[in-house]
Length: 261
Image 1 (cartoon, rainbow, N blue to C red):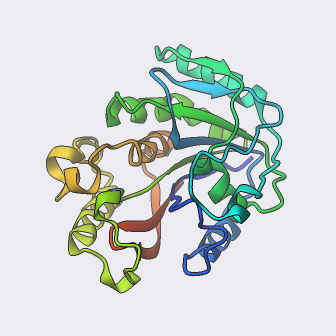
Image 2 (tube, helix red, strand yellow):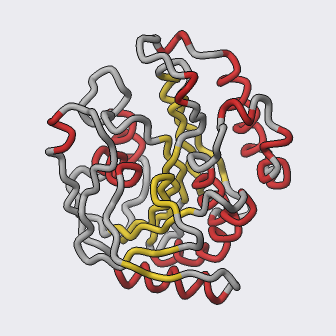
Image 3 (spheres, rainbow, N blue to C red):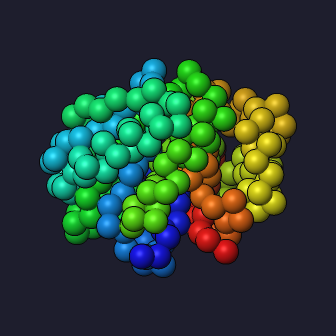
């Protein structure tokens, strides 16, 4: 079986599936370029725990973990089957690499089901979700990815879902994509250049080295999933970039694919 790529997805607002002003079609076009996974292991910015926890749900609930949005959004469901065996294997691999973890039954939060709804609309690919640890650093999440790397040889696609820039205090919901704050571009350009150069040390130290890092990520839970995907990638990965624009002035919708060279 072909080793699958790993991905980082900027999942945007929960309204992505129902808002025609957002680039929802881009997620389907991205999925069309990828090999079909046997299963997906999703690391979402919206499931936070002190230590990694893998969900062994056989039929994960669709969690509507947001408030004040249109009713149509709450009526959406993503009935993908779970992947409990994958979750147990992920937890075991983490343990083998000295990373304490556990399992539980947990549904899919919007950081997981929103992009998956757009990418795999038939909901026929089994999904297991793995939590992130916002009190731990980028290096921890990179090491989590490293521990899980061999899953890719068994048809598992490891996907980090967050946002490449995420400061809602900067957001202007009336802004056009062309009104992006220039500091967003400076940050994403830096991040992309370091990814392209495979400069792992700089990326793990992004808060000290990247321009406007603290402004783009006052807290970094939305960026941490990229380090899981990066850790699971091959050392000589080939970087693919899908830039879908910047919305609400501050939210860059950029997706990364790490595939074998």
